[in-house]
Length: 165
Image (cartoon, rainbow, N blue to C red; front, side, top):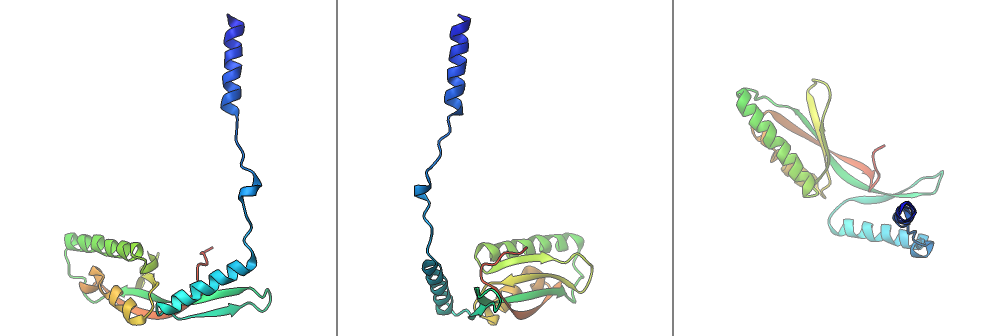
């Protein structure tokens, strides 16, 4: 009986440890021409949507980076801080909801506060085609409407799709 139980246990272990590996046949390398066409297609798509873009070629590596114009909004301390603590808390919640909505809709890529107590309270980087659109979206923020923040926007260039590091 013990032999049967041990045999069954070993059989279960063998079956449970079986791993399936996929062959390398399923992974296909993408030729360089396809990647370049993809960058070209992305560039054409951005231009068609009204974005400003250009190709930057690194002289040393000869790598090409698609540069896109974004708009960086500096959220500065505004003139009106007369709200009650409760109202200020509600405004902060509405402010965060607004920034979250901008991110979800694809209008903003990064938002965040600064870690000091200076005049500039935070930034938002808008991924929109025009300064006017970025200005309109930034000024729709409940904190800006209430006068607790004011906006200063500048065009800003960055490599399309490059991560922070």
